[in-house]
Length: 167
Image 1: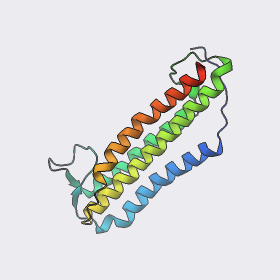
Image 2: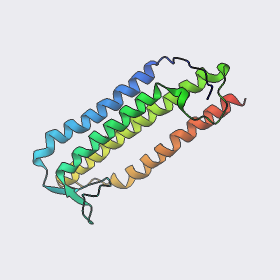
Image 3: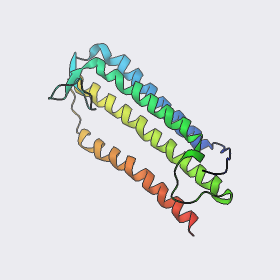
Image 4: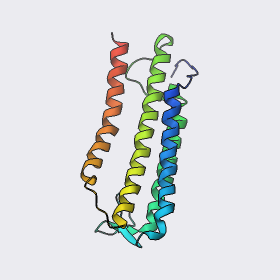
């Protein structure tokens, strides 16, 4: 791979996305810490883990896995966004188009990191609410929304990159 190496400066939006993402992960852990002692020992777990039973219930300590795992994933995504030259692109990267494509790829990763941190916050919040006896009807909307965002965001950025490079 003989791609140009360009240092991409973060915009205010890029910095804001990073801050919001890490605040949501931190907020997930904080809200869990605040309500942890009020939760029953077993509660509905809204993410896949081998420790939950066939009914979807697991020990409340499983909830700590989510902010830790999502925090690691978001951290890796943000580290990766600092090295856009190693990513795959649908076009040939040349010196004249490198800066734009690198910025777009880095931004896409930051937006995905924000969606992932929102996912963490949502799952923790839903599990806590369910554990406290509240069953909001949001559950049926959140999964399709998040799946749509995780698939749609890369597709939108793909179209933007292709449109810019082929017009």
